Length: 181
Image 1: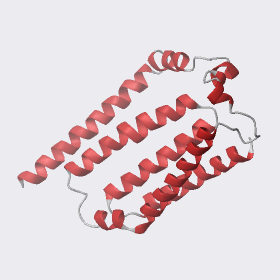
Image 2: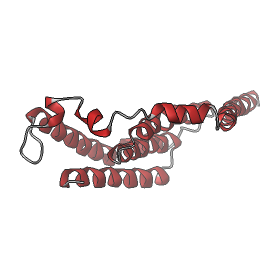
Image 3: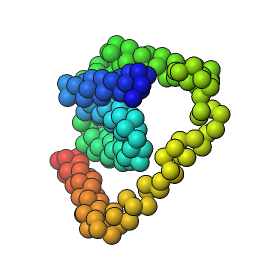
Image 4: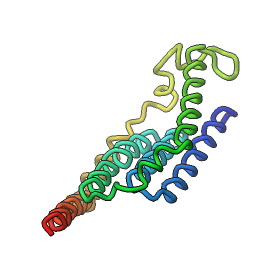
């Protein structure tokens, strides 16, 4: 891995660790869930840097998307988001982290627009967008995962979906019981 790749790897690792620490230390469940989303995105970035693009995409879609939405739905349904959540979000740390992430993304965009790789030669990706697919042999990584998921692990996949459904139904029942009292 070159110097820029190492920098990006350590940057994502630092963001993941800091977000995980902030997730654990937040008092409000909504603020904690938002820091968990930040952790999930940083981990997805690490997966992508390690050439596990499918796992990175699944990390974003399943964990940072679906699971967090269900979590926030249950938190809002049970009215657990009251109290210190607003104070957690209004602090200066998220603004500073957001600003640093924005500067990092802007720097990456400027490097790509310049069209020069770190070694001084024109970037292969700008000259030929299919270069990464040719370099990896254009391997289809989704088909083997889907085949295993829907054949060997179908029962575990369905049990997981039923557990998520049962947790949402349980939260609704608890919220109804609480509001009726």
